[in-house]
Image 1 (tube, rainbow, N blue to C red):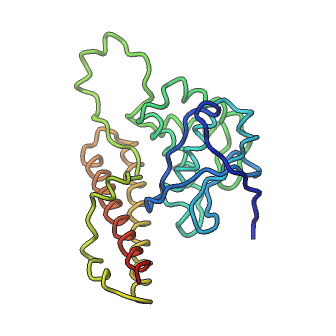
Image 2 (cartoon, rainbow, N blue to C red):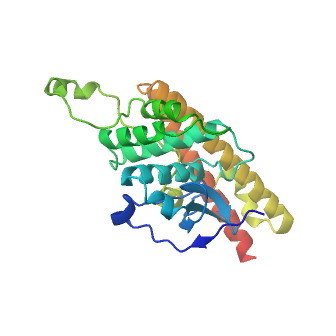
Image 3 (cartoon, rainbow, N blue to C red):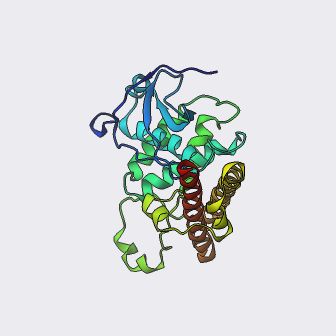
Amino acid sequence: MTRFLLLPLLFASGVFGQSVNCVDALGTPVPVLNARINDIGQATIYQGRPVILFNEAYASTMPDDVVTFFLYHECGHHALGHVIGAGYVFTNEQAADCWAARTLVSSGQFDADDIRNVQAAIAQLGRGDWTHLPGPMRAMNLIGCLGGLGPPGKKDDDDDDDSDDAPKPVRMTCSVTKQEVEDADVSDDYSDALEYTGARLDRAIARARKELRDDVAKCGDDLDSLRDDPKDDSLKSDVEDDRDKIAEMTATVKALEDRRDDQ
């Protein structure tokens, strides 16, 4: 079993840039733990809970915005369900990069200069490994992640009259908020399972978790399509529907697990 030397960490925005408020695909808060690992960060499960392992010493050598990006990259693995899924695929790293870039830009935490700084840092990375693109290719992919969202920058005066033609913003993420989960109803397909007990209830929880992972994966695919065609309103609608389904299934899993805990 892999062991890590963990140290308590309060992620201070004054030291390492923006803090990360992370939840995984099941709506579980993801803390950041200082750890002596051979990387800046790693998304994993530690003692049964999702965490981001964070190498504080490694991070101290990097600019704040680069550290923030890599923390959001690791959060992306949790938000997209990579850690709770079965297996690990090459495209997960690219998806986590895109999740981080879209989330930081759409939330207003990053602007064009921040994205360029991150690109420059990533471009200096080496040839990569079996899960990561080589640094220069990964840097080029980063802007492609933004699609029609685009990092905000200076606006030309000539563009003022074209603002109505711009694509409407869409939440370019598959993660849902705690409030969205609280507002969601339990899936009709699992309403009877709230009366189950024992092994029957455990099987229902396992099915619900799998359905949630499938919903997160579908949302990721729809986001990729939307990135390629950011003006397609039907794709925007699909993403919003996906997020509603993720919130519903997250609420379902939580309700079933609460039922099990109350037995």
